[in-house]
Image 1 (cartoon, rainbow, N blue to C red):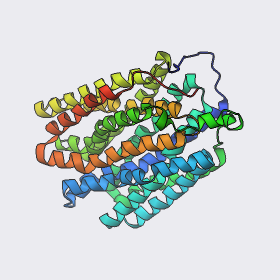
Image 2: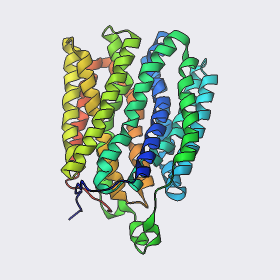
Image 3: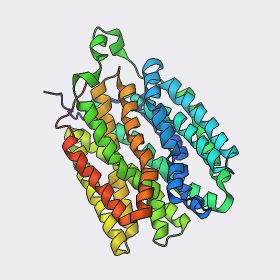
Length: 401
């Protein structure tokens, strides 16, 4: 019988662990700010005459870059550790933002620069999760990973409240100043402040057992990966097209950006609560199953809102965004625990690769659906994917601890 997660209130977490967590959150939030910017440029691009599907492909450029390098960054993390990967990846992301700033007048070159930014920012996705798993005991990882996973909606929040407004008032180059500053500053902070977690198991006789390929011993990791791929589509549908949907309902671009940012912030807090819930419940996959049901419901409700033109669209978008981002921390923690310390970098890289493959398809795919069928039908189609994920969710957790 697989080991369970027993919540222990007396578990002591080293103070240094919280420092590593804070730096990891900040590092990935900065990377997310960069890769979220293209989606928030869609209204600007549409106003300039770019077709809807092409704008969606532009928005997907960073996620395509993430897909290309996530597993590679994970393998490098397994070999050299988190410190080098996070600091080095942020330095490269800073250079990619500079390239985007230089290319701001050419949509093609700008898209290539954002593709490169996605390739480099994948480093923080692959390595910051390992920092959490390495520094926090099992009984506190749900909470810690929930905090770590709030970096993604926080990055989207920061992008949503700055990029549309600055682009509309001062142009794309001004909107890229904040991503450059944050990535540059955090490169230095992470280079100085991040310490690789202890790897005591490597010096013990159990290292050979722990190094066994977890993908060959059971189908658990594959199932969690598949579930995450299906559940990430609603999340990226809202983060990519929530702004456009609101503008279509009559909202101004700055006001819509603020609401999208607020909804992402609420979702960030929700990830912490869901992580703490999983610690208390002694399970990651049980809450994951309930989140999948909730995601299907809220996307269906959004479809009804679009058809009926209910006046509370803002409230429903905030709720839907919060629900659809809640699964990430659960699945991420589950993958890291099942893979073990010798495989967690590659397993987390694979986890993110599957998610960002799906996310890359959301831009052009959902964009094409919206162009042909409208938002209501598109939301309804997306609502079916979490239901497909339900039978794939594993029945019990697995852990190397």
